[in-house]
Length: 222
Image (tube, rainbow, N blue to C red; front, side, top):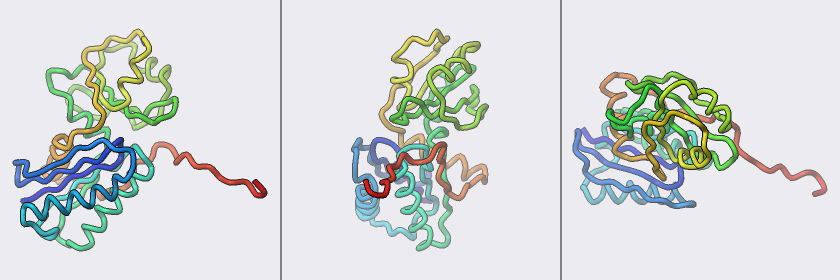
């Protein structure tokens, strides 16, 4: 079975194609703009180079956020468009929290494993997992102080594109491991997607918005 996974929710574009458990092709590229257009071009290129058609993809995994409001919507729209043209395609959404958690090596995990995602505001997107990567908190938007108060009692490992900014100020925490990364791994995105498939736990992709989009509304007469 061929599996396609992709992400446009963060600071770049990531996509990968797998045949069963073997990686066939992939891209992970940091870029501020044009992720959606770049995604479509790269997916088409990967399929063409491997002489595949969209209808031959059996499983599709897409990151549902949180992250860029535009990026989340673009990725989901692309995934749903592919699914409409392939009625037998198995489709699932995967949160950025789940993917980042899957990037932590088992030996690096602590009692608490905190995924911290950049908001480009003063706060952070945050979710806690245990040593078996079971969710032990809801996805939240928290300040540095609120995060510190939740973690003071236990040793914690950190991962996510917001971890570096969070820990740039001393918080008095018991830290086991910090994984600094600019974007999620498509390998971890595939693993998370495939785990859902094996567990028969596919989730139709819906955007994970923890807060509304930052928008400017023009006042009348402005």
